[in-house]
Image (tube, rainbow, N blue to C red; front, top):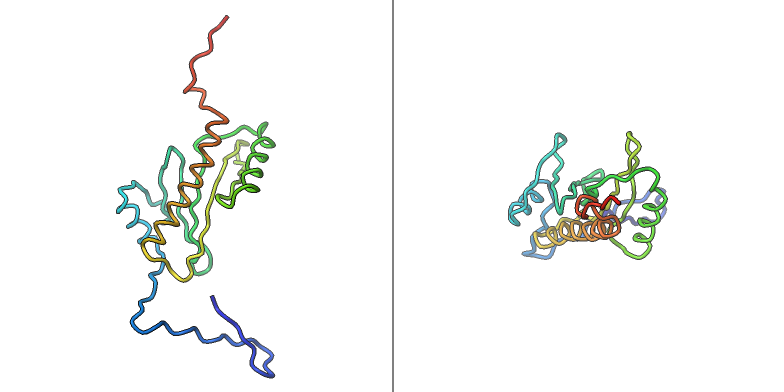
Length: 173
């Protein structure tokens, strides 16, 4: 992140010089899609690369995307989508659940997206600033945080809305 300082009489800010790294210190590696993929492989996770080069995968039946955003790709975003769709007549109910979650917890940010077919996708995401890079442990922590926080939210939805196929059939009377 650039730091700004004003010189006397200057009308425009001038970028302050970046502090020098201590002797012998190495720069923290930049977060890239290749490093994210390498982390997946080191963990034995199965993942895919979509047509735009973005990484994704299935965790606990939910689809996750791993995005690098911002002008310099300095935001790592782990975004998950709940494995079920919701009908429009439940939008107020689902919005209340998302708002309550967002009020009580820092992660993940939860929201809904209305699809073209009128159904609702429930999304959870965790964004992490990685402008200054991340070592392997920091990258792994950020990825696991996104996966586990979103999975926790999706599990709470699964408890509230059990899969009808997992329930015993209703007995006709």
